[in-house]
Length: 246
Image (cartoon, helix red, strand yellow):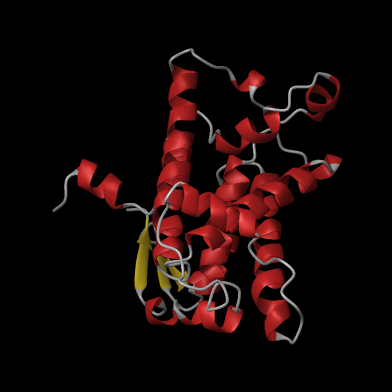
């Protein structure tokens, strides 16, 4: 049994960084060092008040410490780790680009009034869940020991549970839309004969290499942007059984 410190250090870099910042964002709120009103996504404040930081800070606030916060943080650790160590193994730059694209897509979607949400951390976590469900569609999931289903249906099951327990619909739905958009552009469309228009930019590769984050492929032309090759690395993980909740 590894210690908490050993477990934390074993986490892959992007998942560890994102989960840590989300935890710190909520901790600073409870310590009175920050307030959600100053970091929420308010477009009038962004464009007329020149408060550009709101475009970034809203992506890390999962809400106050609560059961829902714990579930979202667990989702980052579980599904983010399995993606980063599975289909995105040795492709840290591609995983980071997925997160950047997801954040950008959510910001654009949230500019539509009916989709507006003051905080996009939950949608970003839900995007991770959706991409994971498409990478491991046949994994068997047990939700709180009550319902067993294939991973492919997990995002919709979690959305239904959130509605039942009184959580808003829009954040979960935004995450599903962003996740499907990413998966369609990088996997489904290229597999159907289309061009991958969402290749990881070179500046992301350089950023990762500069900060020595994770391990990068020897050649960018190998599996980095080939959906048939890159998804093949995740086949060995499919069919495993995962358990969510108690």
